[in-house]
Length: 68
Image 1: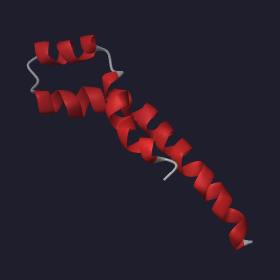
Image 2: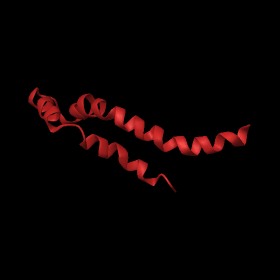
Image 3: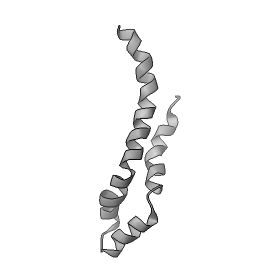
């Protein structure tokens, strides 16, 4: 499969979130789960969405002419 690397993108984008954001959340008393849901995921979401869009665009564009 050509886009097999797409499954790793969310993990890669989550590591791109600065550690200072996580540390600030922990410093305010948030748990690890709260930090992931309220800090890491919203900060990484634009990168995850753009990676998914780029991954599904080529197969979609090649399938469209078949329907015309």
